[in-house]
Length: 103
Image (tube, rainbow, N blue to C red; front, side):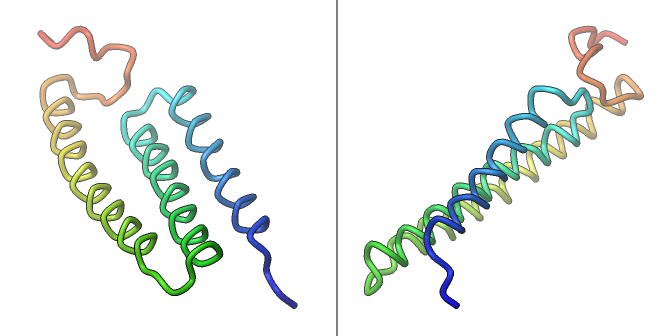
């Protein structure tokens, strides 16, 4: 039984829309960060799948995926540092009260 490109794209699309939904509906900064990571992983799946099915002898899609993983790791490190600083100042990480940074 062969897995076609449509199956991978369906998984990627579901991941992307779950990430978009989580980004717009969550109030916790960590949940928003996880939603952004879901969206980035969906794009990495697309890079790998389109490389495999369109250009099977080349590795550009895989290199883009690795670059995307590196960018996601750096983004996560910076975002968690920001979240830790917000928590130290405000004692919570909900987005409702982020505008009141004076405490």
